[in-house]
Image 1 (tube, rainbow, N blue to C red):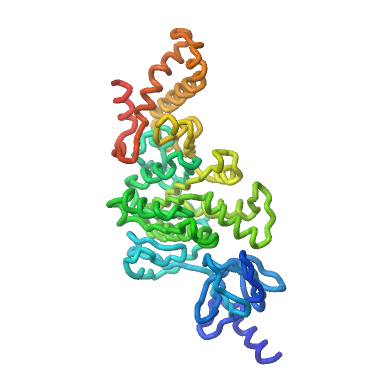
Image 2 (cartoon, rainbow, N blue to C red):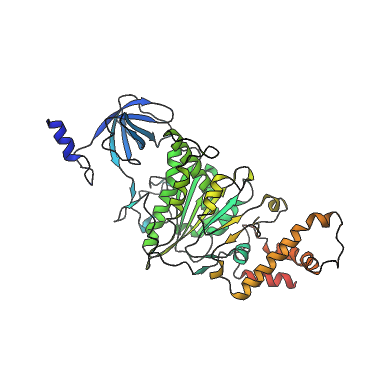
Length: 440
């Protein structure tokens, strides 16, 4: 065994990278999608960061495929400034060191500040960006109600602390407005917001106009639409890792990810670059394992810690609610809010379809009387909507159906009571507000 081989065996596979020794290879192929690095196949694990050095600059990438011929590395930067022969070394997995001083700050997917408010002081404990969810048998139960202040949600799909719910909507239906209203909900000590693939102009609008005084409680993780697929794929995991830190400190965290669909698009781009086949409308198999892995990390922590109440927006491509991403996510979450374009076209906001939306933990929130009232109201709304065309054609005469007569009188009042825009105050008691509207 020569000296070089002895050195390789001494430092390969150690639990921590050695400060004075780096295992390196070189870039042997450059393509628009990824780079191929020779000399690292035996020393790198899938998902580890790779530091790429050229002309005195260093860029980061991630190992997305490993074979005997080399390691396929996808850079985090949008523009690759690395050429053939550039040095590539193992940088290990990404971790963060969140702290209380991070509240009120805006960071990128690496956990670096982008708000020009000075450096972030690291915390004492490092947390992995891609950590595992809590053990199922050690998790606390989800039973404590929370009031969002959004009347249609508190009436028909009430939430609990630690619940995970999806907001399913097409473009231009009011998804961002509803998320903004939910961000103002009381009862949370920390708010973590992951803006994934968002338009750049909307970032400051959301932070300045929506959060207002609550911005001091919020940490925003931002990856705009012009950033690389690697950064857009990483941002939700960074937001989740920050939320997990505060949950483990015993805090009740509100986590908003907008949107999971853009995460799926980014994960698809990375998987296709790694050579995975497309199986469902262009999505690769790994996309459908990535999504539940992220979603399962939200929710309650182990007994004695806090909670992460997760609100995940799902952008429905072409208003097709049978989209593969929507189908995959719907079964993992604890409920879903469906925003309907037809309701938005009528000028009723939030455009929540109460018949298509559900909260699987509503029974922990409603009293028996409230559960019965919500069921009766849904039945009236269903009867009203099912007969809309018949009534528009003049095919119904009053008195022919007592239940429908009641729906014709009450449902417009219910719709009016549910109307609530961003400028309106949050509701302190949705059932009382509804009772007042029906009596008027």
